[in-house]
Structures are given as structure tokens and as C-alpha cells.
Length: 356
Image 1 (tube, rainbow, N blue to C red):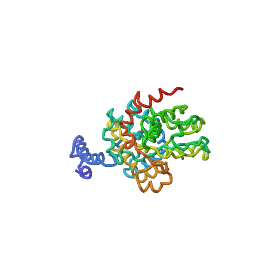
Image 2 (tube, rainbow, N blue to C red; image 1 turned 90 degrees about the vertical axis):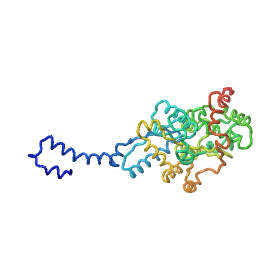
Image 3 (cartoon, one colour; image 1 turned 30 degrees about the vertical axis):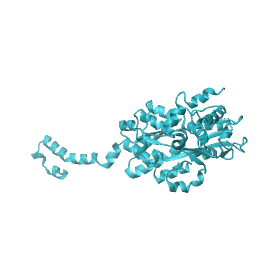
Image 4 (cartoon, rainbow, N blue to C red; image 1 turned 45 degrees about the vertical axis):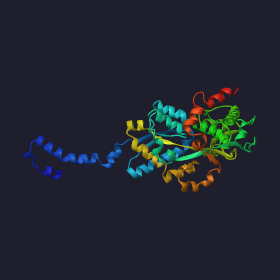
């Protein structure tokens, strides 16, 4: 019955309760149509995401997030908010395991996401859910030295020389530190050296570390603002950012002969997303990272994009360094973590042997 038919019924011929039933009957189809319309479905969907990420990606996601918000509103009409949390990668994962309700994680090493999978917070097949092993970009490790490179630092062996102070964040708790540690270790293995030789190199390098900060940003502050150290091990993506923030001409970038490819994996935190009803929005957010728009932002922040056309466009930003991978050269992250970073592993053994 249409609204016009309802209004045409004479009040004198219908009791008040009967009239109310007729009106309700006419209204229900309209209400049902509104309740199940796409606009109402979007309005009812969660409108806030939390991206828990690593220290060095802070500036990147400050640009990615508003771009996604605009793209999502254009596509769906829904206004969403993406919040960020940044810190040492392993500390961040520990916070998620401890109850921080991240809808997504955007990390710089696979072991952190694997830890979430082991705890049942995300699926064990998280690598298969997105392209490129669920890593929308990568980076590598470089040296940042003071103007004029007074210690003449050129390659990994120079970090082991007496009198050279090396700044690196703690490899036990930060992805930045782990990649620096593994880049040095792998520089020996990739050239045909032995584990014993690699361990000797790392022992001398870590002996030269005056302070171990808890994150990449802390290490950068130690080097740039506190004036400690002769060389900072940092991601390629950080070099220009540091110059822009602390003044061009104060530092120089040194490219070692080879370095590690540092993939940056991402994942939906399934358990949290299911609880909050945000799974679709969380996946859309991570899917966005592979779009040309996001890949362009990634390249502009000196991370290595996966899109070949975008990489080619920005090729001058990236050092022509020979890169080796964790899987190919070091046996994969599971082996690396068990060998080096568990309690009592190679890293702990080296630190215990160093006399402070």
C-alpha cells in the first residue's frame, strides 16, 4: 500500500489503532530500503583505523593516510580517520600483542608479522594476501657521515676500525637495528665469507657503538642533535629527510659496496578487525598502498616502490648498490631470528663478549 493510498482512507472508517497499523505497514518498505542502502551501509561501517607502524615510516604515513581518506571518500562517500602509532618495530608488535587494538600493522621486517600470526592475531598466510609478499615497498641500509667524512668511511669494514664510533639502534628490539646488523653480517656472507668471519666483523662494529637507542628516530637524534658518533647506519629513505630536517651540508651519504634489501611487510590484524568490524576497510587501506598514487608518495619519500614505472621515474633517488636478500643470502627470517636475535643468540653472545 502506498502512502497516497493510506492518506486516502477516511478517518471515520478506520479506528485509530487500525490507521496506525496501515501507516506503519506503508512506512516499513521505505525504512527497509533506507536501512540497506549503500550509503547507510557505509555510514554504519567503522570509520576509524589504527595503523601501528615502525619508527622511520612516520613521515610516509602522514602523507599516505590523507591520500587514502580522500580516495575512500571519493569511492564510497564515507569519511574515515586513520590514526598512526610509531616506535621500534618489535616494541610496537609487543604492544599489539599486549592489547593495542591495531587494525593494520605496517612493519619493516617479516618476523614481527610472523609473531602476530603465531599469537593468532593474524593469519599464517598473511604474505599471500597482498602482492610482493605483502611488502608494498623496500629500502636498504646506508651510512650517514659528518661533512667531509673525516674518518674516511667507505664500506662495512671501516665500521670495525678502532676509533670509529658507530650509531645503530638496538638490533634486539628494532627493525632498523636488525637490518643494520644483518647488512654488515651479510656483507661478509655475500662475498663468500664464513659465519665466523661475519661474527668477528660484527663484534668489532658493536664494540664501536657508544649507545644503543630503542628506535631509528632515537639513533638519528643521537647522531644529529647530540653530536655522538662518526657514522649513522640508517635506511636509504632517511638520508634526505635528515638533511631536510637538520640542515643540508652538515652530513654526507656514503654508499657501501653492497647492502641488504629491506622489505616492509604489511598485514591486517584479523582478530582486532573482526572484533571492530573493520576488516573490509583495513584491507582497502592496505590495498591502496599498491595504487599508483600511493606508490608515487612512497617514491617521493625515498622508499623503493614496487611499481616499475614509478621506480623508473624516481630512479635517481636510489643508490646503485648491489643488494642481497634475507631469504637468498641469510636463509630466511625464521632462521635469522633463531640464529641471531632469540635470547642467547649470536647478538647476545657478541654483546656479552664486549668489554665496556
